[in-house]
Length: 111
Ligand code: SF4
Image (tube, rainbow, N blue to C red; front, side):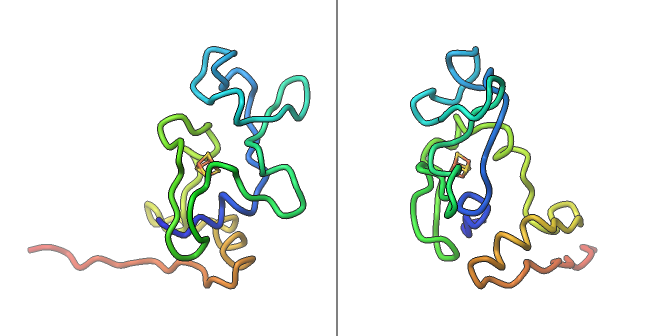
């Protein structure tokens, strides 16, 4: 998806070992510590979160500038109706930007 609301709504936190210094892939300098065990993406620990690595306009066209190095919450977050499953968190993030929930796309059976 190119909406990006989830990157600009939630605090994106993860176990510190996902950082390069812990043996993971997330560049340390793009994170900030939250607790002795958790870090978060810079920009997401504020009243108006927006990940520093999100590029573009939410709701229009965005991209993640560290896609291959993004942390697990970003990898695991599913937009609504992926695999036929709604995601209330996706809907909530989109609503914060005045965007309607995604709808389920029913594909016709192929012959
Ligand atoms: S790291 Fe990328 S996918 Fe994760 S919140 Fe930031 S911009 Fe979004």
